[in-house]
Length: 600
Image (cartoon, rainbow, N blue to C red; front, side, top):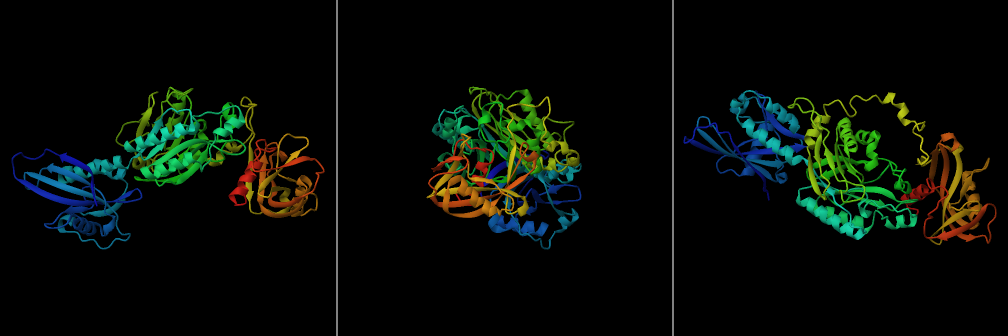
């Protein structure tokens, strides 16, 4: 059942009061494909939605189908007709003194292929042509028409188009709220805030950084891990359920359970309750408490389905903002809107960073901070649309859409996504005139004075392959289990734990390396073993920074030797993963890859 979603009144006051009155009804189609609308344009340069007058006794739907087909050749899909905008219009008639017209603008779709048009003499005189165009472009052209007195309907059409621009805007709710001190309390308060955001018309609700624990990072690792929650936790499940119930996307942040240490993470949930992406903060603050967290590996961009249409979304988290590369790579991956959880004082310089990221990449940025009653935070959540220039304005404009104060609250902001896309398609920033062939030094991992810091985290890259040439395989590593429990080894000279494995000896088949190392380091006598994949490690202090390769295996052990020989002091058989790995940047990633492949 169609319903009116907006009622507009237009009175041009260009008519004679008390004169003759002519009443008319018309029906038009608002037909959209991606970010383009079906319109017709005439010899005076005006653009309008296809449609026309309702015949006596004709149903509104029949008028819509007939008029659209006559003017454009496209046939309306009857089942696609949904809501409408109703416009009450009063203007000078021809020849009557006053025209009072009601126009129904129905949202609908058309069949893919256009047929033959059937223009009447009046439409032929105006030389109506068919086009698919963006709203900002249509509005811009209509606003430049000079002889509008000959086409007075242009005022009505442009008014409806401007209303559509507002309706198409993506509304984000910045949840600048304070944590309660408990996971359960944060969950309930957050769910309530999301419901309030929906009442305010939000398409996306966004939380500040690590909402699940209120950005708390204890020094004690065991306590830190006790605060972390998994991606399948009841906390996340409740937000997924609510997102579906509210038909609203939610960007919820949490301390994610991860090995070897938790991660600072945002999970974007779409309006259907599905995970769109899970992003962990890449630029952890290693000079502070976040040195105890595991950094993320990469930036993600995904298409978010909103009730206003699809938008390409990515995320940065707090300190990521301070590196231009973060927003730049998200732009290069197609992002149109960045969701940025935050937990720090937002003063002029940090806010200026966000303004710059939006400007230089021509994208929207929504940042939400904790309010001023939270430690080391001051609110001032912000939103920028990245549109520095508008054709109708002289000079540049401030791209700031919203800056909240320090108080706790829910702040909504509308991103004019149609206008943002139009701007991106014509302006000079973003990826339009970059010279990446000249940026080679940006990929260098060398650090020189005055930027050397002793607390900087070492960069270790672990990659996975199905196969490489046998000559490159230098190591074999075996994830082993017995009776459903993990088997880990402790070297006599270390206080850490590791999975069995070691170097390949000259002339040895890599599979024999795996079997030998499994026996030598665990005492396994009877076992089944199979290859998982090839892995590689690249680190500056490992083999002069060269990529080195090994083969990962999985083994089920049935029988052990009574005592261990060689350098292994003892083994442990356990359900839990170690807290203190020998190679914390490598071994947890091997375990995660095996898990992804369904072996754990």
